[in-house]
Image (tube, rainbow, N blue to C red; front, top):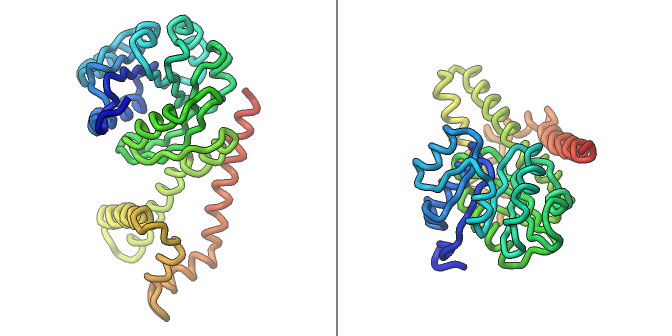
Length: 277
């Protein structure tokens, strides 16, 4: 399907045109993966439809119209609306079409149950930094998916950040790490800024420095060619210096154990919520 970065003649449809759908769409257009005229989007909210039209897409209140006109369908409805959306559109979702769900907690088996046997379904877990083209996304392809389908999903979600394939049973761990993780990092930034304020920095300066520090450090890890974060940390910690005094204080406070516990608690909660459905 690809010519350069663009999916040649591929039509992409969105069931639901909320903030996440808009972010994905803008990323795809910015990276020239799809042309706005080749995108169909549905939403019951007229304001969201107008917004999609303003981007240059075909907007409608009818999900069936989206299904009819799309090769790839991105399910971005509320999770409790998935069944109705897919059941209504089932006649138009042939096995030639790829269905990608970003609906939290909806399993591949549930998605497949609404469609014909052998339908190509992918379950995706993006996170809120998707809205600034910096998502950390895990995805699990269903049994009927091809290697080309996986490449399609990677291209779509790499356009708004970074995407990694995992078996479906590990999507709870993805939720606990990168799905819930932005809240942990926001809390870390808040605490760093408070530390700066405690030592005399103006609050706006402290917050800006803290946020940029986390951004820069993350960029360093991603661009360091696989260097272990502990090695990068050791490079900053000169013997008897300020940094080792700070990291010692974090160790004393149980920093790493608390972060690991947070990921474990969120993963466990994700599994609990999945079993309730």
